[in-house]
Image (tube, rainbow, N blue to C red; front, top):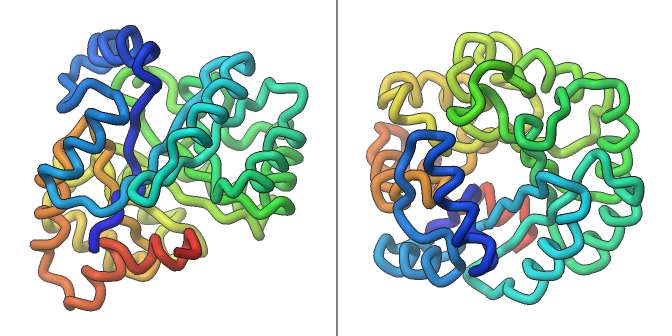
Length: 262
């Protein structure tokens, strides 16, 4: 069993414009066309049982359409997180509706949604998400397409954790992409999850091992960031880490099963 906790795809009409834009902005080539069919084809080729899709609404006006699309397209092999936007005046109502509709969590991307993760205005929204019972997956660390201002640093995540201690957080990219030292000092070993997406290429086996051992394999989730990396390559990288077999199983699927209630 393999559950990829961090993937992306779009409605077919959106993918046609979104994928070229994102490829150009990040100077990166996608490995499929960004559609659900493209994601499923990649899963079939790579041996992935379940992908968790992490949508991002870059404007409040996109929230409803994204969530309607996600609700219509979820299947046993595709689990969708919901989309929320901090500037949506109906944020809390939207979050409650997501919970009522069976969504397990939401994705927040501070760089693309133009907020700092620890802004005071965000704390009541995080508290609402915690009270409603939704997981929050943050894009954390440097975004390769928008590297000049980091909107979600390890220190910011610590402040969120200290302010809303019951919020269930997944900090993507091993806690904070490219901010590895601060991640180790401020986040590892604390009560949050991290995912492995888009990190091995910088950390390598030694760095991944160090961070997993410091944090605990029971709070690490396999994620590929597909279509921006190959699911099979990322899967084999994690499976080949010199960890006990039980730790590998935790990372590859058991932690996700527990977190998602599967």
